[in-house]
Image (cartoon, rainbow, N blue to C red; front, top):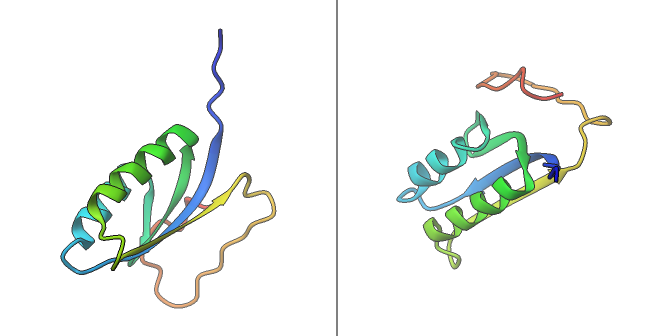
Length: 94
């Protein structure tokens, strides 16, 4: 039996207390590519996205911190434009 791993393209942004920033970034970088301060992106399986969210929920304070995950099933109709300093990950999109 073959199991299909559906890949998603996600953009993750976070706003967390400075005490937890390093842990959140380190956790996210295991799954996604750092783009700039508090922003990561990349392809991820549904299973790994669930793992990432579970790990992040153990780190953040739900009363104080915020994480937003934009999920795109395809990047076919997407484009990225950078204005100003390019901080990283420019060749990872599309």
